[in-house]
Amino acid sequence: MLVALAPDGQLLLTVRTPNLPSHAGQIAFPGGRLEPGETPEAAALREAWEEVALEPGLAVVLGQLPAVLSPHGFHVRPVLAWLREPPRLIPNPAEVAEVLWVPLSELHAARAWSEWRERGGLRRRVWHYPWRGRDIWGLTAHVLHDLLDRLCGGETG
Image (cartoon, rainbow, N blue to C red; front, side):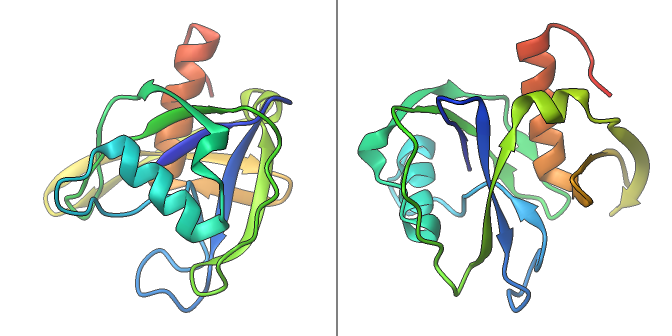
């Protein structure tokens, strides 16, 4: 998963197409599975290229955010990157319905809220970030919450 921050303080997010087998229509960071022998950083850059044609050379990888266990049992390793310049993106219509540039300042100011959900015997806190009439939630919101907490020095929401 690539958590890409543009020079103007906006995060790159996508809206997944409605025909995907999982998480259809949800707001997400570009990302996907690791290929054999691939690092999380290489996978994040590859997936961003495949999903929105983000040139890998525009991204300066800063490191990884803490790994997250998805409700489906996947270990997700968010890779934080700084974009050298605003990219020209072309969404892959098989995967991405829309590209979103979300100002970090708006997410920080959002009235984030959480709920507890149970799945597979595990109770999890699920964050929601309302943004311009949309609900950014689930794994994406979990990573956002962690990022904002680290950047802003205290719990957000």
